[in-house]
Length: 167
Image 1 (cartoon, helix red, strand yellow):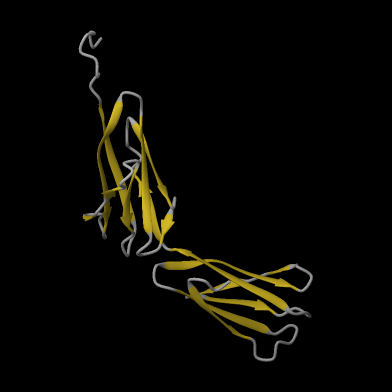
Image 2: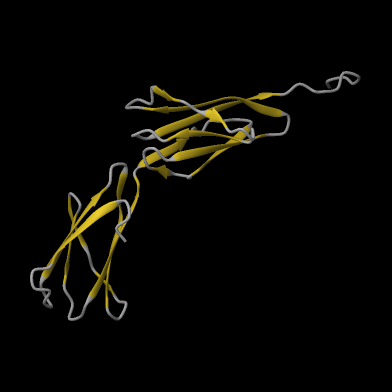
């Protein structure tokens, strides 16, 4: 599987016992998630990571299947200190640059969303533009070329009744 990156395999003669080198180069905003090598019988072959996207394995006495999986490389972190409601995202933990990230909010009973902010940059000091979807049910933003940090504030709603005491 070479979606979101390139895979190059150097197997000089392809003989049993020979070391095979796999070079996995992810596209911008992605990283190598897994490199799996299986023999013809479905047995997984031990793969060693040599660093810088280079992986090696010893060629068995059969043909092999090589699978390299790339995953989005920018992390989505939600503030742990949000009170009186929940924030979730889709995708949940990681996204690639230019992906659309949806931010869902669920206030606790008696509360409503006051603000939602998304930050990026070295110290999370650059604000990302967040827009409310036309349905009013969630926000969305375009993933920048870096990790993001999401925070939100919920506030108490006023009671809609005027003929009863607030207590």
